[in-house]
Image 1 (cartoon, rainbow, N blue to C red):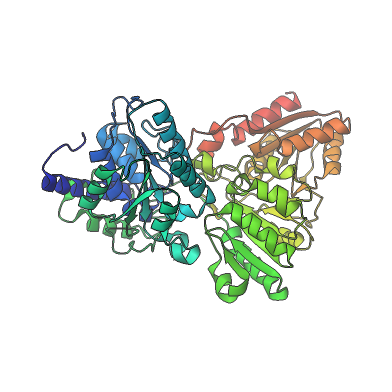
Image 2: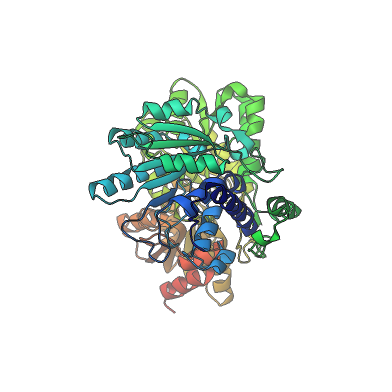
Length: 616
């Protein structure tokens, strides 16, 4: 399929309107794990006009030097972009059927593993800065291409968006067009103006040096006119604010009532049939995707820590101490907001503000409990964590989750592989982990009892999917939770495995298989990462021939490094190896099992390393 080139305006609009329906119905039919249906449907008309009418691109030569550049700033809600690109021939149409499957180049969030994708995205609020740099580079090299970026309105709550906008205005980038999908909703069915008000948005962009045009983002004619008119003024970048409806075209999705998720897992699969019927209307030829009606057959591991147990413990502590307040970043405990409106602070999609605001709250006598989505805390707000919250020894608690690769097919932006290394180097900071719901309760109480900054890394809401037989490990009961002490799960004379978090599941299974083959294998659950329990490592070194650290973190600076430091500084004579993420990004993705295997973290990999260490 090629771009639409007719010069008859009415015919052009008619053809593009049909293409927009084509993008919507097939994007929804993909029903992939990280489907962001609301944003995908609200931005489909914008993507349609861009890909089928405006962008100067060549699917046969995606790196054509004179091409226009397109960036989906969110990274999320990219399903219509994938459909358009496949339709135009950037990659085979049948690849769409494998989106987020094991080894597929189509990740849950836009990534350069797919031909034609210019930049990997997913960490919100970064797109305008990247686009500004690209536009500046094109202009400096006298290249004719322009840069078009579609940004979500919620991600404009990130301060970096406005830093990028300020640079674009300063350099007068006529070749930059920023299009805001102004659907007015973000996660948890909440409006942007409730979470963190953006209006007057047009005046904000004008103040940063943009020429601004507001349009109906579902009127194909208005979109065509606005894009064809860019640049709107000489010497200025263009901003088009497109007023859209989240979930456009599907009655029960409109106005943001479903943020993201998969039909058949997160939502009733029957709703998908209804949605497709509404989008198709009488034109059944629009649907070219074999609709995925069920979620993956591979088992998932349901856990409640963040969804339920966190809320339980937060309320419990808030009831007995009126200094406890709650700081959220877009994903809030709404029950807490209702019960304690004066102690609930939602900064929106703004991790730096979240940490700095919490510093101020603590310094004036409150005890903030900070809900943190890893890896964005600490990657996006490390300066505020190090220089302010911890430097001032603030009594604040950071509750993080999704440690490691459990956000598997989302891609690198959602892999938390560096946080342990970063947390370990920050003075005054206590770092704790919890394996399951029961241990999370213990760890939460231990964290609250400390007068100072604490990070508690709990478990995700679910491992989805790819549990690889790891759903119900027959672990012995947890011991008492003591800060500064880790826990022996079992002792062994041949090898001790040191692990924590999600890696404990497959390390335990590997240990059981090694035991069945006649090896004596111990296992330590590192519940206290900082302060680190050096004595338990010395005990393991004296009791076992070898120590193997297994973690879903970088081997550079992670718990493996902490163990190595103990072995070196205490002159312990023991064989030792770190098994974790090597110095690379994990781009070969799929479910959790597949992704771990690609990273060298399967049960079999653990057994192989253990066997070599033991020396047999």
